[in-house]
Length: 447
Image (cartoon, rainbow, N blue to C red):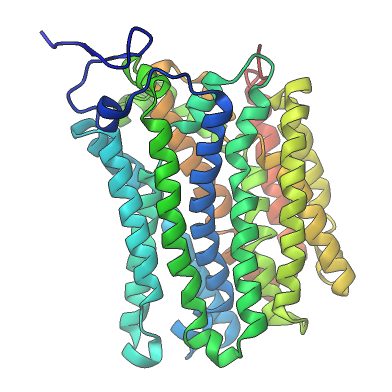
């Protein structure tokens, strides 16, 4: 019979697994408030999103020139966006692989390996020689490292948003659900700021030779900070108790799909409008401005930084709104507004500086309001034993279907058929969200 050891006094959770990792050593009797958990979630995920956007911005501004110099600028950017999408294709596989690692060893080991893999891949990208130096090998290495980033991203799922939701005070679930999402505009704001500074203060030759590599090294350092923020929460008694209650147990993939597959699909589709909009106002406009406009790219990055600041305020507002009217109503209303916004994409992007700025600022406002409530939209529908893995795969599917190919598709459609087709692409995401929400009446945030 397995022995049970209690750490941290009577209030601490019993430790029943010999492979519990850091929680065996660091579990504390002191209560950790939802606010403390929120700080860990925001800091940890901001590091992830910074790393994410460093690659995303580089894929629009840098990689077409240094890895695909033999192609014209449009085709080179499309090739770059194809490699960008590989991480999202690999991410669900990474989730499955690292769930197996967690079952075999521990959650701590899974997280350490995945974040080490992510950091190593990111630094390695900064060290890749250009196409002019090693030829097509550079493209192959970039693709492999991008796949490695995707696998690592799948392994970085730590369940902290679920812990935050379960620890949220009554009537505040929408607010606490928003906090994990807040990391996206924060990460984008910092990444855009770094690239804006570099493009404004370096010559184009300096930027394309060595300047672009600097943000990847910064991303590695920030990743370490994010790791410690996560491990601090993972070592708490609250987290330990949820482990012992089996809230964060990996579920068998076949059983999950057969019994809860509909929740995964509906959850991903419910957030599709947000995820489609995500890259249409961050990555795609950078490539479009670079190809078809003459305004300085650092000026446009500054506008996007203002947009990210607006998104932060909008996300905070989304938490308040969702707690008053419910998450399903919030997501449905925002999906309808995104559908309306999609009709103005051609007019705004073709409307000169004022139109482009309006597109960015309104787009970020809508993103903040919708993306703030997009994560885990159907998490409450999962049975307890499936919730941890189900939430991870729902997020993976939403990223894959909604965001992975958005820059590639949007740029390809706009270049060959016109910006009107970008409107249809965004509209399709909004319609899918509304359809999914109509199938699921359990999304309301309940007391």
